[in-house]
Length: 111
Length: 108
Image (cartoon, rainbow over all chains, first blue to last red; front, side, top):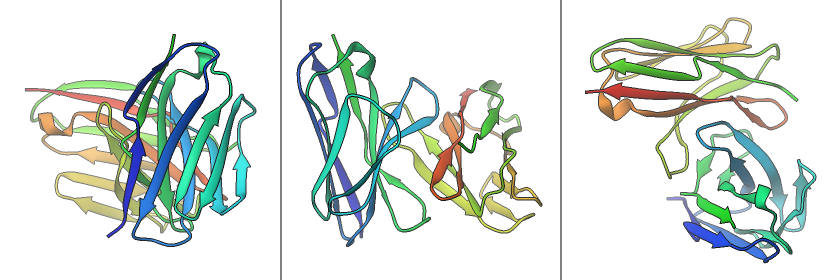
């Protein structure tokens, strides 16, 4: 069966520090991978999606970037965090237009 | 951007009551999904509806896709505290577009 792992679960980082959130998927090949950000108790904002290695699309201009060094690994990064980067970050995978399977999320607080 | 508006935004009801959550858009979607999310966790897929007018039942939950495939509803019968959570709809276009969310609290 397919599983998705996302870590860390919580993170407190100072303004201006770098960020690296990692997501891996098991049990499937060539999944579509996504990074979302969620404001408290609200809907999801798509940040990046990837249909294959080195194929990444950005939906929202920002100081975040994403990389997919391996088929089942998706990384969200920043060189310098801003206060506004605080939020709940979710990684997800799907087959084409199939349902999403989400990771358990990372609560990022920038202080 | 294909906007999906959910209503109500917040809902607090007593255990045993019925409720309906709505998901509306001016756009047509090839399919629509409903998710439930508990605090500190990722959303979990409940159902996918594909055909206009389609109705799907999942125990006490009834999902309906509008005839024009622009809207959907989620009806919960005899709500229980375990139904508490954030309910999200998501419509499939060239990607999935998530709704604004409905936060449900069921009071024992």
